[in-house]
Amino acid sequence: MRILVTGAAGFLGSHLCDRLLAEGHTVVGMDNFITGSPDNIAHLAGNERFTFYRHDVSNYIFVPAKVDAVMHFASPASPNPKSPYGYFNLPIQTMKAGALGTHNTLGVAKAHGAKFLLASTSEIYGDPTVHPQTEDYPGNVDTIGTRAVYDEAKRFAEALTMAYHRYHNIDTRIVRIFNTYGPRMDLEDGRALPNFLKQALLGQPLTIYGRGDQTRSFCYVDDLIDGIVRLLYSDEHLPVNIGNALEMTILEFAQAINRITGNQAGETFLADERSARDPQRRQPDITRAKTILGWEPKVDLDEGIKRTIPYFKEKLGL
Image (cartoon, rainbow, N blue to C red; front, side):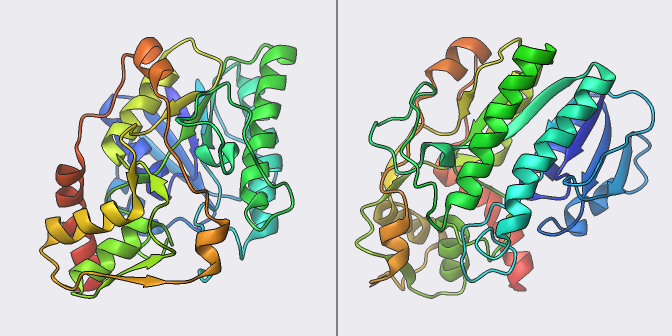
């Protein structure tokens, strides 16, 4: 297939491009570099099956020649309020990527009669009251909170995708992505893994906000991309959770990072408003992915962290 990937220079988008090219597809990458990095796709320069366009998806999209699939991954995603590249500091751009960007990419799929896959998120569940989260759980989202620009953008994107599927008969798919890690993550992303791994490699105590009893699940990027590609190849139109179902507390996760890296500095606890606004529990029910896609994660935490460490060391100059 000839596949348009938006957000191609991002953490997930660049890995997706690699996987699609490895499977013999032709990829048209698109990114405006507002949060993505040219470094993430530099290794694809000269690949005759990869073409790149620098473009903002919130503007009209024209793709010369036919495409067979559109995979919309363009959006700021970092929850770090101190990062100039996170959605807290790019609120309008985030909502435009989810709303206008989804509208424009669906328009490309409609014009070309192509498949469409939307990268949605576990954030659509908000601070869930049901554990683990199944795809039919409608969520518990604060529509005017500080995280709403990302959460609501993705919720709107899902609704618009299903509208195009039902009204225009577009062949759509929706993946709800849970916490993912691996090489090419932004070290200033603000999520637990880059924060902890960076501190551990520098021999610093790991900073935990609150008591560390919030829970998360962590999926290695290769596993996630495998699930997404399987979804693209499937006939499933309803949302599918892709993530690791192994739930652990942030404190347990920090202790695991220190053990794997050999960091002796331990952990430090800080009272911070971040712990109050963070979802307290996050764990996917992946029954649908197992049943429909035959997918479940294969890379355990120890192995995934070991695969990620060299990239972090390189970025830290270690």
